[in-house]
Image (cartoon, rainbow, N blue to C red):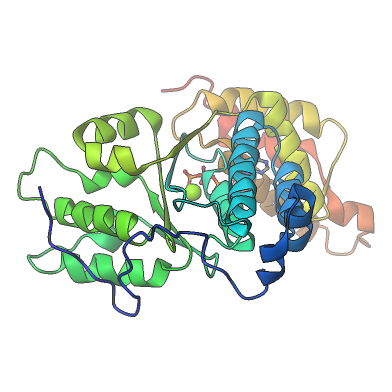
Length: 323
Ligand SMILES: Nc1ncnc2c1ncn2[C@@H]1O[C@H](COP(=O)(O)OP(=O)(O)OP(=O)(O)O)[C@@H](O)[C@H]1O
Ligand SMILES: [Mg+2]
């Protein structure tokens, strides 16, 4: 099936070029002369991004390994290009599967930085969208919407959250199909300047790929984000609090563990995002608690300590079973 060719305003419609050394970028041209992995890493500072990913994110060992593997591929590709060996722009479109709050967006931002530093995309920004940003309500509205988004994303990463909503088989005239077709074309023709990352629940994504083999075949890297264990969620909480200059008062850590064990089995649990929300609410309660003591001099410790009572008031402890 040959689809019409879509061009994105403001970009050259370059066919995937056979020369396909990653397009040279200002600022990384020094890396052009590199002959060793160490030289590429030093000149592009990619190692710094990988290190940041390691420290910023608790757990996620398999994800971190996959990102390092992809970085290795890109670095070697660069060295090959420097020696005139490159034959084809590597396919870099990815799929991140996992439940809400498992770090997909955060990793996408880092991935964009890596791609940028190694010169695989010009700008390294991330444009994050869902179906509503791409698909119109009326005939003729979808193509301009999708193209506008693509134009914004050129030179960086287009992150499509819950990508499977683009495909609605129960409605045969659904405009989502039009967006998919434009995306497919651009993922092929502009792959030297745009990386698409599809994200969402694993099972729904698998169904989507089954019905959209064209999309499936364009995705080179599938990365699965597992749910966090309670111990990891606790570490994430500690890290989030430390970053905001809060500490856990005596007994809070143990109570938070109980909280997380309960919360995990309740509806709408969203991993690290739920941790962040729980801490935000605990800070609100701490503030009200301190606010009530009008005349007391509040010390540094008072102001930076969350105590168990700030968490115990949570509804999570009153709804003892998940409905
Ligand atoms: N492993 C982790 N360590 C520390 N913080 C984390 C970790 N994973 C996620 N977070 C934090 O949790 C929040 C949610 O993460 P993020 O937005 O990356 O998840 P997501 O998978 O994209 O979620 P959603 O599917 O809901 O969009 C962010 O504030 C992020 O910093
Ligand atoms: Mg997200």
